[in-house]
Image (cartoon, rainbow, N blue to C red; front, side, top):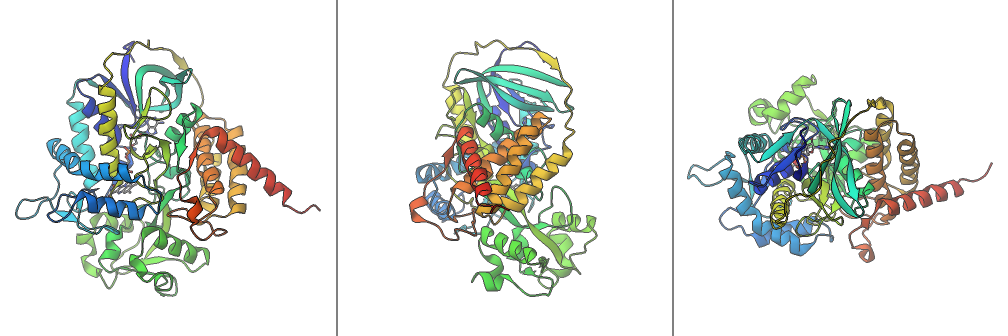
Length: 523
Ligand SMILES: Cc1cc2nc3c(=O)[nH]c(=O)nc-3n(C[C@H](O)[C@H](O)[C@H](O)COP(=O)(O)OP(=O)(O)OC[C@H]3O[C@@H](n4cnc5c(N)ncnc54)[C@H](O)[C@@H]3O)c2cc1C
């Protein structure tokens, strides 16, 4: 890295990071990413598409109503309305960047329907490859923008602070050899989600909560960290990450059955297999926990048309030795999306001066306790645009010198056993269904892993896990994606968002661990 002064550093090269960089052009921006652009980002794996009220008869107000209903009482309604109002403009931006959204015969944008949307409003690309097409288009646009400097294969490990202000970032080359400190006037966190804190996830390995951890360590306020959305039907064949059997399969009539062939969701919810995502995830989880197994059976509804209609899912099944034309697909819930994150305001500012956040790492409040399908790519681009507008309004260039120190350090992540331990703990105790004892056990285990971590990456993962588990421990109700078996109903008195710092999370953890030891009878 040269001794250039960095005006703006963006941590993350998914949809939020790249969109923000493009919107900031021609301002000089450095995009730091843990993996090469196009890899290591959930954005590239999005199948469904982006929600936007672009069809005749649909309105941003209706989209906002659906978003608010899905969020189970915790949505910031004003921001949700702003997001749905800005959605059509962001779709136009995508078209300008060359994203080939599917069109009808008349040439209008084709829109699909997904669960809990009251209208057809998902714009998509060649059926199920929206994320890949968007990332290809944004990646090409970024590479053609001279003001954007890419620093690939650099993992941010720590934010650099000057008092209460964030003034840059310390990053390690992915192979673990070197650490570089970069200073910037504005730092944007766009590092994605936390799925890889769990043993079963649909997210890429880079989605392991480092962004959340480094912001928390710098003193940022986090929001709603207990709310993790689990996809009900990941294909359970031992792959990490787990491939998805998309919701569209159930939309086309595929049914969920247990090992005895019973359609178990019929007992759970009047809408059966088409119940809301969190309800189906809990149904599948319960069936597996009871030892009955869970399978998606598409033999009758889709049968021989499977390869043609669902090529991505078909390929994943075949790779695992399952022919879904003739066999039910084994499924399990998988950590999929984090509603919580670093708290941001309407401009994407965090509680720390000099630090903005956008995309899955941020918590704007538009998802509340549960995200409406295909609203996450939308949130990422709406707020990436707002961040860019806010930073653009700041006129003076960077005055912080770059600390161009490149320190050799040997710290390969030799902690894979502990990583596995952490992920198993999260899936077992901070997963689809939680309770007080399990969460206290998790907090103790996570605190121990964090304390004893030999590598910065493991310590950061454990810090992120602590933030999720502590907020889950402290919310004494079930709401949206957060299900407590010991508090099975929503409590109207608790219908408010969670805001917490790392120090507060540590206090919750210490009290939980202390209480759990006290409640073990002596002898
Ligand atoms: C299988 C799947 C299907 C999905 N389908 C849809 C859908 O149809 N519609 C929808 O709206 N949403 C969907 N989602 C969710 C959506 O894809 C994500 O929420 C969204 O892409 C997040 O974008 P992002 O830019 O915030 O993060 P990401 O796209 O995950 O990008 C994060 C970036 O940060 C980098 N990074 C991470 N940590 C560091 C670090 N410490 N230092 C430097 N760089 C770092 C990563 O390498 C990556 O470049 C899906 C998610 C998955 C996993």
